[in-house]
Image (cartoon, rainbow, N blue to C red):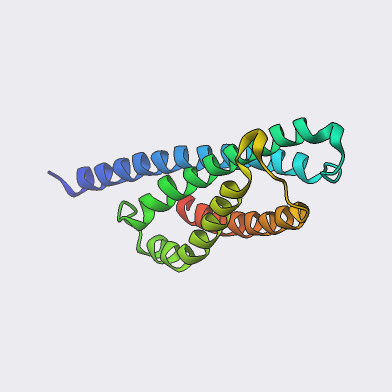
Length: 157
């Protein structure tokens, strides 16, 4: 086999791997967008002591929790997992992912904790400090998005 043919095959395989990465990234960004829309709707609601809004607020909160977990899973168990577990061949991306992973893990845990506290249907007790908790969750989401964008930019180079 000629060197030219090997180079062509290598480029072809790299292009196929990047297409796979692109699909994972597209799914992640789609989940992220849906989650951000729900987050903004939830953050813009009046305080939770308004009785007439309890049902819609609870439904919106449940929707947000579900999409938040889907978004976390889309990143954590596909893109990051793929990079950290050796599927990514570019050393600089693996090193970047390893460097960023503790922050990703922290935001994953914060999202799961939020979900555990508020994904409880109609019997859910919405805490008086809910807006503070939602604000902290928003800060974790913003941090995670910043990390993801660094990783996505590196993967797509």
